[in-house]
Image (tube, rainbow, N blue to C red; front, side, top):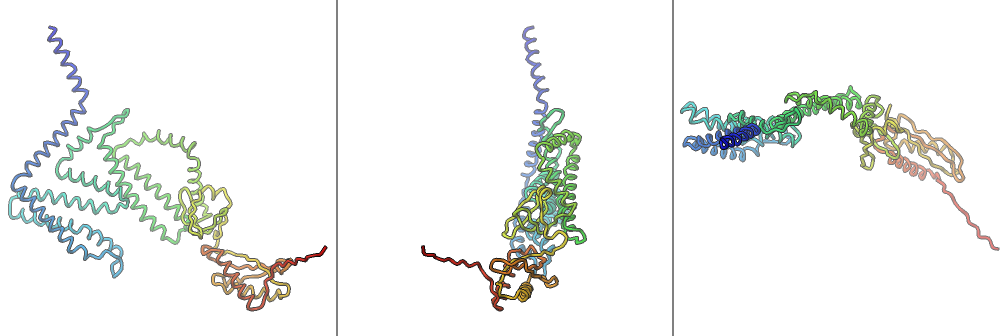
Length: 448
């Protein structure tokens, strides 16, 4: 009796261990099934006719490579010489995949011919290889729409793996294997299959959102009926909607419960209240700038010691490029709360003043006329808004004047145009014997 009791006691844990490791047993069963399928496929591959078909496929690969080497360099891929941009892009894609395309065409022609002349089983492996090559070629061409290199490779390899399993009839076993590899966090079960689905699905949706965003942004930027600031606002709102929609639709497509994001959004709200005040302030300030049209791309502004033109309006900052090539990233909040001089807000007209003096012996009426003529001779000075010259005072050694003139291209620089006007004044005064005085000091030495 003791022995029987011991056997019963020893058998009980075995049943319990089997129940506790049910997931591991499932994983082992799926892996065993995949191994058996692979072993069966290899056995079928070693038959004479399968080896013949493999040899034919290798021969077609070599022939396709030769076609690529001979005819590929002859396809024009540069713009110009009568080749439009869109055609050059198609030619570049065709040139890089010419061997692949040639292999697909040749193998399907051969499969069709063999099915007409012999049993379908004699071309079965060639048909499988043709299906794989065709599917991989289509995926490779379709993913060219994805501009991001990492995302393009990720989607390409994921689609290739799925298509290969689909053609070989191993999707059920592969899905079961990936589903068995999972972790559980509370009531949520996250499997490797769910992660891969999320990566591929979100990648596709984000690629589509980026494609639509880029093409729509180009259309908006070319629309002259919309002001520059409104173009930027439309593009930013469109990007937020597209990428936000791609994210949530992608999660919904893989079966993710979006109600769980309520807790996450609450945490984000608390974070915004404490740690992201400046970020939110800059975002809101950027929207205000775009709505009130106080500044826009191309405007010339002065903010403190920074003088330049606005290159781009971002969600967090404004890019200002100065004449010396430096690019300042000014937070949007500084443009809202600080004093900004916009040289081209309502119009492009900019008035510049330069000060000079002449000797008391020179006729002021003549000096004023010569100064105005000198300013008009400079290229960037406007001719339809005449320069003016006024006497502003009588100094210790000179009669002081101010010369005022107008320009419409402050992005071309202010210091250089002032310098050109000063040079014109110098040349004009020298040719008319107008003297520019300078302070003189007389020192007397007295004997004790």
